[in-house]
Length: 278
Image 1 (cartoon, helix red, strand yellow):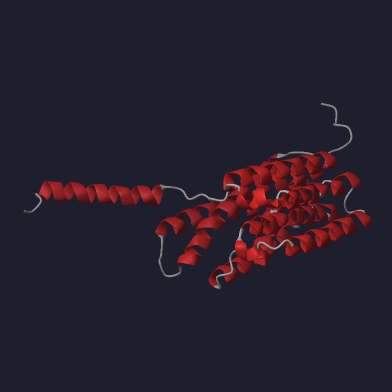
Image 2 (cartoon, one colour):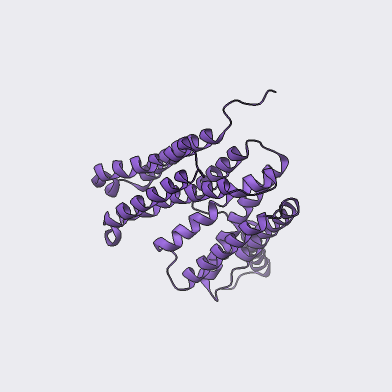
């Protein structure tokens, strides 16, 4: 029994429509936590600049689309020879928007070129890690957090037209804070459940933050915002059984709450003591 030409044709049309729809469906990064890191870091940079201008908004859009462009690119690298046009299409769209905004911002503030260079280095390191199958290694994930946290000096540089040691210190502070999640989340896996790497990391990170304060790159209030991550780690040590066995949704809420407290404290500490008169 054979299908009539009309039925066969309708199936072909439906199949082509599905292909077109899959092409038109935008890609988005499935890791919502990185959006919190991006926007949180950007907010601290804007707070340091102590103003919000049109270029600040453009910098935020640039950072957002750059992050969205990274996801389809990395997925396509993972797939190797299995070419997926949808990822290339939307990666190209997001990348073109981010590149256009980046060039415009660079024409306003040439010092931003240094940040672009660091972001490119981060992307190259990530690509190599994906090819070698070490995408989820601690070092690569920390490099990834460092690249995303560049949104802080980007916000400052785009707003003020220049970079400063304080802006880069905020970038390092954000990177150290958010990278702590690399060590806490891995406590939920049997192969990486040891507390020793986390203890070493938080100890070294604390010394680095104290060093930034000692050289007057961070204020005391901003420096103290880092104690939030130490409190989080101590809480996890006390509730290690719950942390390892709880559902990921509960852990995500746990991590998000501490991140929001840190972002709030760090951002407020960077604002001027008195708001300018309206």
